[in-house]
Amino acid sequence: MSTDKLDLTGHIALVTGGSRGIGRASSLLMASRGADIAVNYHTRRDAADEVVAAITAMGRRAYAVQADVAEAAQVEAMMKDVIDNLGTPDILIANAGATADDLVVRMSEETWDHVINTNLRGTYLTTRAALRGMMRARWGRIIAISSVAGIRGSAGQSNYAAAKAGVIMFIRSVAKEMGSRNITANTIAPGVTETEMTAHLTPDVKQHYLEELLLGRWGTPDDVAEMVAFFASDAASYITGQTIAVDGGLSA
View: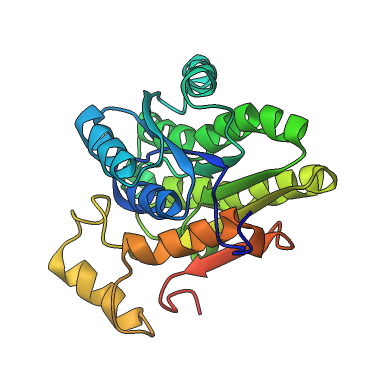
């Protein structure tokens, strides 16, 4: 048995939105430390298959599973599929997210609901589904990806900021419910990170954010993945109910 507390051998992680960006980087890093990975995707099967191929090339097991995390029936079907094909996950990375930016006065109810449902409802549904197996095993890790927008707000992103703030308090509440069962629950709040979700930003907006970053550079998915893998490991066994900003000092 490994004495390395960062080693994830013997664990199974379900990563929602695992085919791209932070989800992809987290899947690959946890696999490199020994975990088997269920890679959830919504529409991009090709990207999920690429992640699965990269993980199996490491000698780990991986499985791509489709689901819209905002739909309860699909989440339940996803969990059954993962258990049948890979085993019961004891690590959940609730990473799937969506943005649809607009000013409040122009934002449609459909735009509001889509972002709230994907980011907040999706975290609730996947956490609820994953906790059943963790409670039986009396060991588990819930790691949700929030955003610095959920800490300090963001003009033009009231729906996203509200959802991500909700994720922080939801996970903190889960930590209080599950601590006695040896299940930790923590949140990571990335800042401006080089992913497909930020690729649409204009050069002026990118420069504005860059000027606010104390470390003088944008974050990468790998920067966030390091914290994900840490929270998933035994090295973080005494940390729960916390929110860590991986944001280059943006929220300072």
